[in-house]
Image (tube, rainbow, N blue to C red; front, side, top):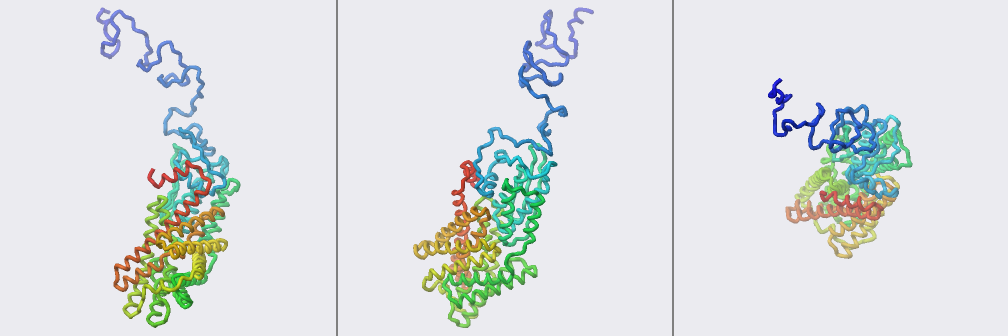
Length: 565
C-alpha cells in the first residue's frame, strides 16, 4: 500500500478543514455515537438509568439523584400516552396546576347554588377537587348514567322556568356529587348538554337532551331542588338508583291544584288587578268573569293542540269584550279597569324576568330566545285585545283612557288587592302551599314600597317599580337561601302587582282610536316598566348574596365574567 492510499479517507465522507493534520493522532470514538457541543465532557461520570440507545443531553439526571425507573410497558414517552398511574377503576388524584391550588373559602353554610355557581365561574384547573369518597361502586363511576341523571334534572329545572345559570349550577352539583369533577354543562333555551373528560389525555364523554315542553310547576321545581340539595350534602348518601327513583316520583306527581282551581285563581287575579287600578265591586266581578272565560277558552285551544300564541290571543278577548259591552250598554262602570284586570292575568312576567336574568348573567343566546318568546306572547295579547277594541270603537263605545286612573287613593284596599293578586298568581304557578303565604306577603310589601315612592314621594313610576322589584328580589333570595330552595316561588308571584297592565291597555286603546303617537308612547312605557321589574328582581338577588359568606377571590371572578375577562 502506497503513502497516497494511506492518506485516503476510510469512508465516503469528504475531507474538510476540521480533520486533524497528517501525523496528529485523533482520539478514538465509538462507531455509533456522534460528538456535538451538547456532549458530556470527558471525565464527567453520569449515571445511566435507561438503555444504551438513549441519547445524552443537558437534561441528563445528575449523578447521585435517585429517579424511579420508567414503566416497563412504556416503549416511548409521549404526550398522548396514558399516565402510568392511570386506572379506570381507581383514577389518579386531581390535577394540580403549576401555580398551586388556590384557597377557596366556601363554607358549609353556603347553599349549594352559590358554591356551584362560584366554581363554574372559575377555570377548570383552579376548581377545588371533590370529596375523595365517591358515591359509586368499586368498578368505577357509571359515567353515562350519571350524565343522563344530570340532564334529566336540568330538563325539569329549565322547563319549570329556572334561569340558565341556576340550571348549570344544579347540573354541576349533581356531577360533582358522584365524583365527576371535570364536567362542563351547557344550557340554552331548548338544548341541554354536558361534557365530562376523565383526564387530560382521555376522550371526553358528551351527552345532550332537548327540552320541548315547559310548564310552570313550582312544586315539582322545589322537589328537584331538594333532590339536588341531598345529592350535594356530603353527609347524605344518595345512591344513583335512589336518585333515579326519586326523580321518577317527582315526574309522576300530579299538580297540587286542579284545573278549575286554576281557573278560579285566574279570575281572582284579574279582579284584584282591576281593584288596584280604581275599580269597584262590579268591576271586580266583571274582570273575574272575563278572565275565567278566557282561561277556559285557552284550555280548549290547548286541548286541540293550538300553539301558545293563539291561546294568548283567544284568552285576551273575553275581558276586552266584557269591558266594551258594558260601555256600549251604558253601565256606570270603569270599563278600562275591567280590560286592564284581564291583561294582568295574561302578561308573561315569569318569562320576562327569566329572560332578563339570563342576559344579565351572560347567557345571551338563552336570553334572546326567552325575550323573543315574551314578544310573541305579547303580540298575541295585543292582537286579541286590539281586535275587540277596534270593533268597540266602531260600535260607538266611549272608552276613556283616564277612567282607570281616576278615584281617590285607597291604600288599605289596594294593599289587600295586591296580596290577593299575589296569592292567585302563586296558585297559577302551582306553588307549594308552604310558600304561598310568604309569596303573598312579599307581594304586599312590593305594593307598599311602590305606593310610598310613586304616590307619596311623587317619584317616577319606572324608578318606583325598579326599587319595589329589587325589594322583592332581595326578600325572595333571602327566603330561598334560608330554606335552601329556589327563589322563583318567592319572587315571581310577588311581582304580579307591579306588571304594566294599565300602560299596555292605554297603548292598545290609543292605537285603536287612531292616536298612534300616544299609543306607542304608552307601549314604550309598558316595556320600560317590564324591564325595570326584571332588572330590579335580578339586582335584589345579587345584593342578597352580599350577606352570604363567599370568599373574595370567587366574588372577583364572578364580577369579571360578564365583562368579558
